Length: 334
Ligand SMILES: NC(=O)c1ccc[n+]([C@@H]2O[C@H](COP(=O)([O-])OP(=O)(O)OC[C@H]3O[C@@H](n4cnc5c(N)ncnc54)[C@H](OP(=O)(O)O)[C@@H]3O)[C@@H](O)[C@H]2O)c1
Image 1: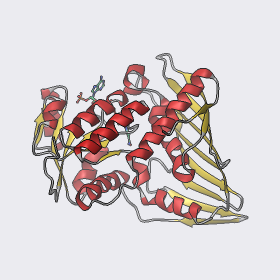
Image 2: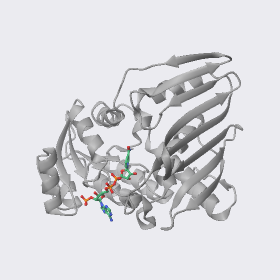
Image 3: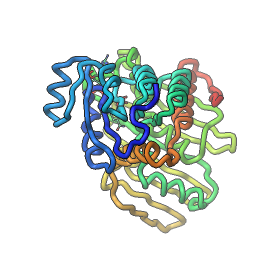
Image 4: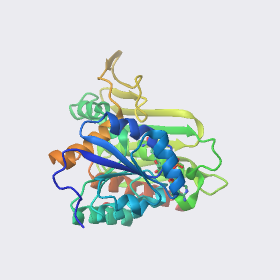
């Protein structure tokens, strides 16, 4: 099947699930130009209806497939547990819908390949909702590094931890793709890749929860250029979001890089000088909605293509394998 409306001027969105994270996307879709929130789907019709009433969404569907069958929906936001991303991204693409899929795009490289093939064959746009990479702060930081603001890059460091105090959260469940690396680790791993490209080799250590997922993960990435990446992530500490690039002539620090807030900013340190680079405020969720809209309607290239999301998943798969075996692993990018 092909996309429902080939001459889109406004994208009509449907939410696939009633997940907590929808609270960030709903205002972003409503604030965006050329976007409308049309429908929501849940596994339960009463839950879909209650949710639609609470958020003022025009149509409520009692199954995910019913949302995909809705001819008046152009783009689907997939906010399911991680293990379900690939199945529903593929089904949405096959139904001719554009897709914004929550991070991680999938939990294996083979799943990523199925999503990429489905998007290509249906002629639809699929992107991963790693929202912070769509924010101008991250683009400015990378531009500074590429222009030599810290000299030659030697090491990139990132961290994201949260205190996950909900015992039944999907993130604790191995069968749903839980674990801190898949969840919060997606951010520092993607930050290192955003700055210096894909690693050749990785090493990881993990501490497991009672449920069997990694509740803390620490990893090392080695690039063919010799640049190193270091990160940690977890569910047991207080909130911590950090990103730094260390070079021969300076250090670039992004304060609160992943969950971008008014206090997020770039600091550039060289010798004893510190310069702050401030940028206009922007909602990162709105930025990712705008990126999908521009790719579909204006046919502009995606700032974070699916191949990059696939490489992020490949890197995390290798990190998990390394932690399981206690051995460094090569990252397969083919
Ligand atoms: N980018 C970000 O800032 C950000 C932040 C938080 C989370 N996320 C991502 O968003 C996704 C959802 O996270 P969340 O914390 O919002 O999840 P959540 O509140 O637990 O919601 C997950 C939803 O998935 C549906 N679902 C389908 N099968 C399920 C199952 N077997 N168990 C539980 N729920 C099931 C449920 O919707 P129905 O009952 O309506 O069918 C549920 O509301 C994850 O992939 C996560 O990584 C991204």
